[in-house]
Image (cartoon, rainbow, N blue to C red; front, top):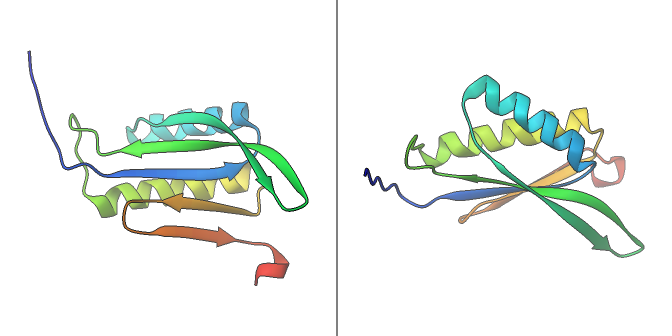
Length: 109
């Protein structure tokens, strides 16, 4: 048996869009760079409506530990790719120390 520990650091990507397509995009990205993510369905309820989406989780996996800034870089790259390929206008990436929200909506700029 082998036991390895690493400092705990987790990030979550929140985005609307089709979860099946998001899974395919995540699979391709993970295969490219050597990464493992979780993906869970989510329903976003907001003033005036709701829409389906997903939450993607990244952790500092002890088998292949990362620095927090490297994990952030991977999460932001994946979120940008998902946004473009799923034709979304915004997303959030949430970590233990900050939340980044990016929007391409005209009304937000």
